[in-house]
Image 1 (tube, rainbow, N blue to C red):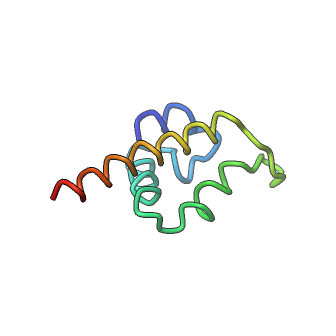
Image 2 (image 1 turned 135 degrees about the vertical axis):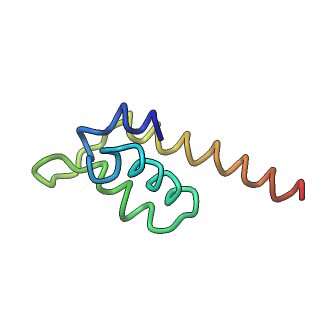
Length: 79
């Protein structure tokens, strides 16, 4: 969440403007609750609302999801 605030607070202040917003956003991504429509799609929009592919955003979201899903699967299988 701290990394998300540092990288994306100007791009998407609604989701990453403060640590508490970023923490909730990252928790939303982990649970899979609307992360594609609420978080990912809004991160790929510019100020005019046009779709802009940003490799940094894609790398951040993809690496976060992969790392967290591997950890969650390991926790579930260990118990």
